[in-house]
Length: 298
Image (tube, rainbow, N blue to C red; front, side, top):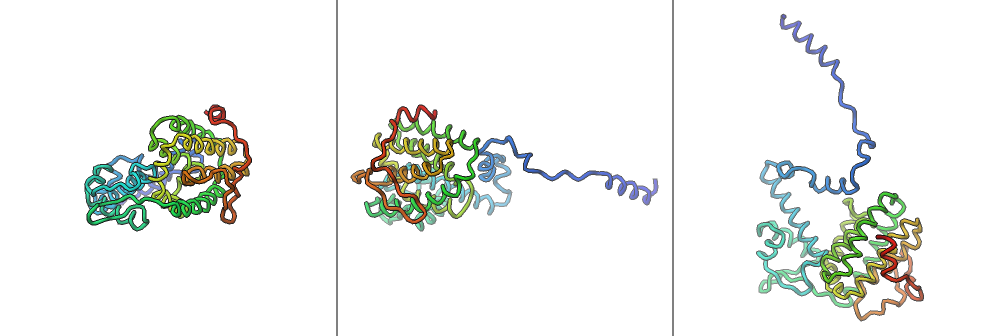
């Protein structure tokens, strides 16, 4: 066959090839609810794909993962308030070298989640009552706003996922493991507030919890506080299932009080709340028992 005829045949064959059909939303139906979150973190991709062949890209990815791990360790209270820890100990905690830890520390120090001291090393801040009161108000504003945005979009399938997360939290509340309880609480909070997507609001809530997390976990050593937090989160999940958003919003405020108020504070007092956040109605409200309530959901 002559070259001209070969080129003509190739053009004809190429015109007959169909382009792949565009991916529709229906193609994604049936995927697990956490898949989009895993995709965004690169957890579905092999490590060879997650870390680029370019050294700079690999370093950037390692630095981000180190920051995320250290940030999560603070949120769930794997570091105790007032604890002093060296750079090498932090590197061992997150399983990496000192260099990416140093970069993560700079970012967390800028958020006032950790303090760097020349003699002592890295210090986890101790929060005063004034600090807790400020974080309380910040939680009311940010988490109240996040729930107001997320609640109307919760589907029945989301509620079933919330029940599974709450079942794990309910069991953790009865174990003498505050860090595990804090991790279970964080999983429920991220889900019901819709913080699994990257946003400015998610960043603000995360920043608050980087500072609050160690103290929250220390306070969760008290089993009665764990049960109270568990009960309020269970009320939120139940109210979402009943489509009772007013009750859910009130329970959000009550859970913030139970998880942030100092131990010496009167949790039964009415709380002051910023605009657009419902006032707590803990005072005078008779709640069902922790045991009965948890059994209804599990």
